[in-house]
Length: 141
Image 1 (cartoon, one colour):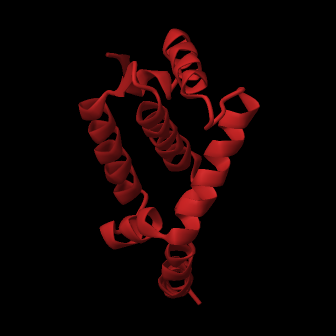
Image 2: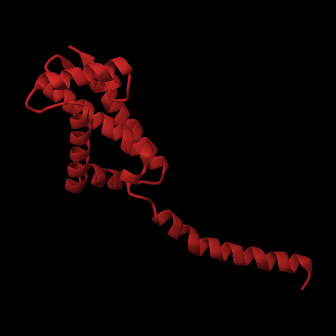
């Protein structure tokens, strides 16, 4: 076989292999919960909302939160997730429960109690002071 014929045969085999394998690789996307650049900012939005809901002296930075959610959707789209996959993740009762448990664990470790709204305020003010991802989504009223 001539070198050009060997090259063409090899390329044909590689193209056939890539055509068969590449869709399988794309289909094997991890759950959005396992994509830190989506999960962590989404968690920050959820915790900030919880703090704003339980502390009368702090509010959510609504437009910043909406902008963050749009940015996350756009980023997830760029990673190959369809809007329907993103919506299914966000609306999943299992994921909501998991996110709530994760948030409650963080808040509890930080001394926040649902019986004392001021602990939400103290936590929120500390997050604002640190300019954390959570704090950036909160504002004093």
